[in-house]
Image 1: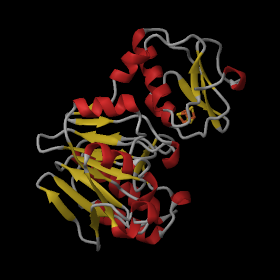
Image 2 (image 1 turned 120 degrees about the horizontal axis):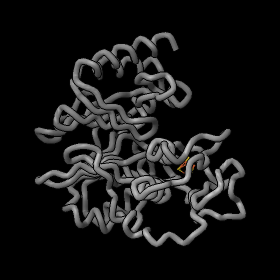
Image 3 (image 1 turned 60 degrees about the vertical axis):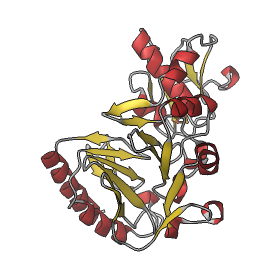
Image 4 (image 1 turned 90 degrees about the vertical axis):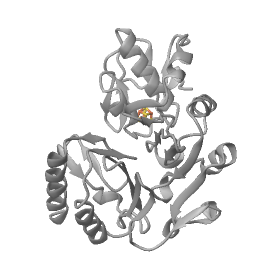
Length: 290
Ligand code: SF4
């Protein structure tokens, strides 16, 4: 839990606060922008929750924070309600898991609920309240991992749920060598009728993205929305393999139709097909000059 003795001075007075252990992962700011903002190189509370909705959203950010840097002065009596609110619905049958992990620098993970078996997209923290909620929501058939950075507690999820993990062979390390389904090559893989895995080398060599139902694109660290630039971007300063390769991957990705971009880092984006197509073209043009 966050410590009051380490409370950042930039917090406005009141119950919620951020302490000095914040790693500036951005999670609380995009989850609950009405309460948290950036203050220097960290986050701080700039507006204390004033109603039940704001309070729940602040509590969700508290639980999602990968470093437990958000705290309350009063012991929160509504913690169970907040725990019960995860995973948080994004749209249709797609959910945000919350419970981000410091091991993945606070990357977001997702749950797709399907009659054929649910799918975890990247790894949240193996937190007991989340695990209980995932159990209630059905069998987990696959744990799809976009790339090596966001695998966090994959062993624990595999052991508990028996799900088959999926990762490209170029992302395999000593920690992931026992992954059940290891993809290879650069061709898309149709896992099931509704699930297409698309290799997008660039951020890392074996990075892939997952297209679900030709609508939801889970992009890991390949593609995200920037609130600052008001457009889709790739992370030039966090490109560990090859920027030219990532640009090539982005051009190819622009040939697919989707309406949602759901990233590990960065902000999510939703638009109709035509707007998304235009945004992808703009992203490619921006990458060509960066
Ligand atoms: S979620 Fe936690 S670590 Fe991330 S920016 Fe907010 S307070 Fe900092």
